Length: 253
Image (cartoon, rainbow, N blue to C red; front, side, top):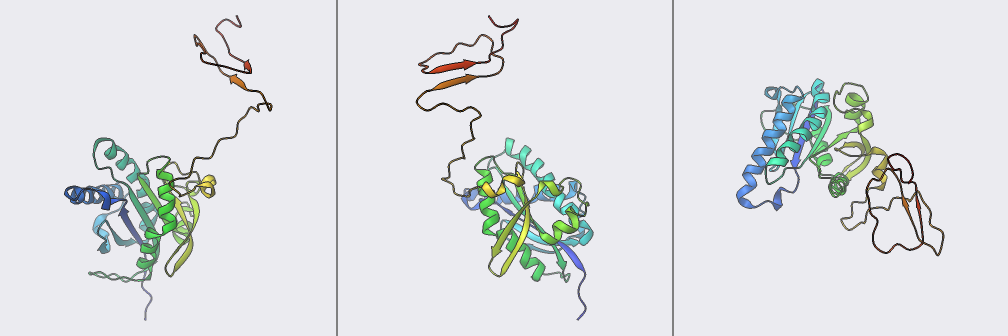
């Protein structure tokens, strides 16, 4: 059997659509589809070349030619911009998870699930990816979040073929979903790749306290006022020592 040519596979899923009122479901899905297609178009994808389209209820899976892989990845950034503007003006707001991968795919007119497509679906639905998006969303509203396979990352991102998203924008994430297990790469607006290990997906987790730059001796209290302060009154009960490096116009008074 001849090995089929490699294709770039792409999918998306609307986050939290099941919580939307019934009379808004179709509007939400329709708007999400239009925005995803607009993002693909802005990234340079010719939608007429789409193959093996499969609707998933809240999204879709499809295939494009392999050279389109970098643009499919960049489309996540374009979608973030479109969703940000959309969500400022419309309710319900739309949040989307996206995935990209590459592998040998047989082009078919109907639904034809093959290993690359199955792997793509596993990426999109991975509990680790969902938990990460949820943890990020608790800090800053997520518009679009992208997960890509290691192969897609090495070929398109590390290879220097993407234009909007580069290697330093991605964080590595280990995922396991049913028979699928791999290390992948994730991007979302505001994601700090270096801080990824500290993200706690628990919705009740309290934000980690930032270390103080000033230490208070045991048994005393102190206040430190820094920067330039003009016409500021300090009221209330202030105990202990108060140190100040307040700057006044014209010098210390």
